[in-house]
Length: 457
Image 1 (cartoon, rainbow, N blue to C red):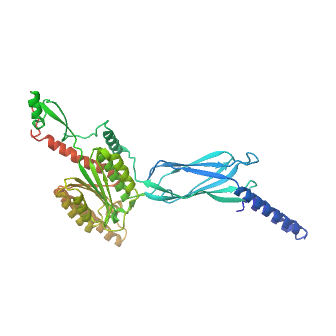
Image 2: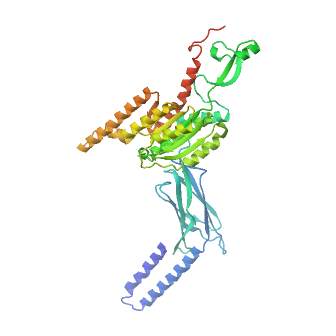
């Protein structure tokens, strides 16, 4: 394509047409100049086309939704036979999909033949899943700056964008402690008395009588107590709602984005404790099912969970809470902890949810994590400006009131209920899960002595 210098030259030649009115002979001169410019343009275009330019794109190790990253592009121009030559002018364009960036990346550089240059640009992925990184195209200016030639330096390629992996604050602290526990260096900081046998030690004043190991006491002829640690090898089922209510967005992330990241963080903590985790994603049907083993295969299982769930997307369908509960009951015949991550914004769905949780409570320990809907709360609390807004506000208030009644009914039936906004979802979920073991430890610690300490011998 023509460059700016060619248009400037053609403009100067066109000015001679004014003089051609009085000097008809100038028409032949103008025609000759036009042919000369056309020939120079063709030669410049061929020179640019035959100039060798290669590129290689370096992606970060992992692309994570909402996490800043840096992409590097290595460029190299082939050396000319006549020598180093002049620097080449390049216009680069990275065609990124909307899932990776809001707009393409552009850069103008000068590349000396026979040399290398690196172009790096920041990138913050916006959506999870399999996404297309468009081609890297370049416009190369000819040596006489009369013509541009365009070529594709890197073909389109697919990239994976994973859910949130790194966490800050208390959630990051809990995940770090869980990882150290898995590596055997630092135990998870939880309170209470454990319930899993660990070792034997000499009886200490104040130890509960229920902790005395009578066979070892008779063998050693002195009081011996059992040293116990936190229960390991428990069972956890995570039910992840992927239905209609999880499609709404808060900022750049949907409810499902927050819930999926929370479910995977909970999986990491539970697997580090040695628990067996089953993740069930459902909408009107069972979407995905992933099992993560205990401490032995926890790392591989967690990696598999990220690989199988990273592209999970919500469906515009009603959630089948009863189907998810039946699948959890069928998979776990023994008592387990069942964490249900959802967002209740419909009265009919709330009734179905209540029946499903009460069904689970017969055998398991269900925990309901209800993700609040900011649009619904804003609709219920903001003053309406017209008549239609009054009806919408009443509907919103009715749904919020129904959620409160649902939570009260479930708590009376023994179901833990947590209602939280998106920015506290992960922390509230982890604390609700770990609280089960703290409460159980305190209950076990109170057995045999009624919670009283024995006097010193």
